[in-house]
Every structure is written in structure tokens, then in C-alpha cells.
Image 1 (cartoon, each protein chain N blue to C red):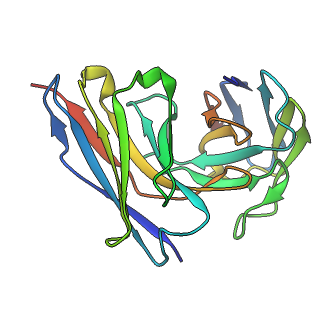
Image 2 (image 1 turned 45 degrees about the horizontal axis):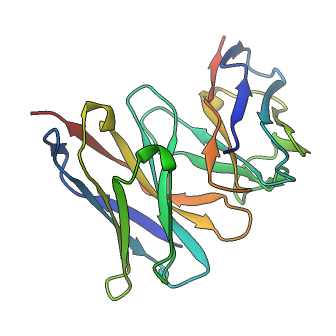
Length: 119
Length: 106
């Protein structure tokens, strides 16, 4: 079955750029699904960040005020997240997840990766 | 944007108890409502999709109901392994999660 695995630096400096990649295994990224990023600050709830379709279409959370971009690399079957101008408030566990095109449920999820913003 | 509100924010119940968690959407979302279970230190896991469909492999003691703006997740007989935080999520438009309900075992 499809599995997702996040990778990237665990520590980012304030005002820097957070960059993560999600590798998709067990299936193609070029299916009728959206590929998503969700984050969870320590001890808090889930926040949707954004999504990308294999065609390159994207949707983002307006609350992130244009700091987010996502990209897809079909040749490597993976997708990526960039979040610019980070602050301590961006410290969180970042998850990648597949979202059903119809119905919009998230399944499966990656295991998550903790990104800390600190100097 | 559609806001999701869960209640209660936490609850404590005994093994074998029937547990109910509610989720309300700020506007109608038809049946585009999904439920997740998140155990400590783990990624969320899909339990229920489309308001009432049980995800494969999920125990039958979990069930979902509702449509429009009001939804319910029920655990018919609480088990020790159900210790977790439960989230609702609307899939009608830009994804949004409820704030979570933490379930503890007495």
C-alpha cells in the first residue's frame, strides 16, 4: 500500500526557509489525489498548510499569508514544501498526507517530522 | 472559511462505556466529514470518512453519523487502546480540523 515519508532539516533559523520533502512509495503520485502538508505545534491541534495535484495545481491556507509554496517531482515520485520567513510559531511536527480527490479525507499520513525554529 | 467546533475538549470514561464526541460545522458540509484518531507521539489515523463509512481495519465499535452541520463520533464500548485525541475534519472545501477531543480512561 502507499506509504509516505517526510525528510528535511530538523532545525531552521528564524527568518529562514523551512524545506521538507515527502517521498511516496507503493504507488504513483500521478493518481487522482491531492498531496498535502499538515502541521501540529507541540501540544496543539492540526493545521492544514496546503496541497498540490500531480498536474501542479495548488491550494494553500490563507493564514500563511503567501509564505508557502509546494512542488511535485513526478520523476522521483515525491512532493515538497517550502515555508519562508519562519518564526518560532512555525515550530511543529510537519506531516505529509494523501487527500482523496472526492470526499477530502487524509489517508495515509507520513510519520511526521519535528521542525524547530531557533537560532 | 468553514470552522469546525468539537465538544467536549476532553472526557474521561471507564472501559466499556459508550462515548460520544460531537462536531459542528459553521455552514453545511453535506456528508463531507471525516474523523481521525491520534495516539500520543503518532500520526493521525483515519477512522471514519464521509460521515459514516468505517475505514478498513478500524474496529466496529467506532461509528459516525450526521449530515449538514452536526456530526457525531461514537465509541460503543471504550477500550484501553482508545486512549487518544480525536479530530473531525471537513472535506467540503479548504480542509479544516476541529480542535480535538482528548479521551482518557478512568
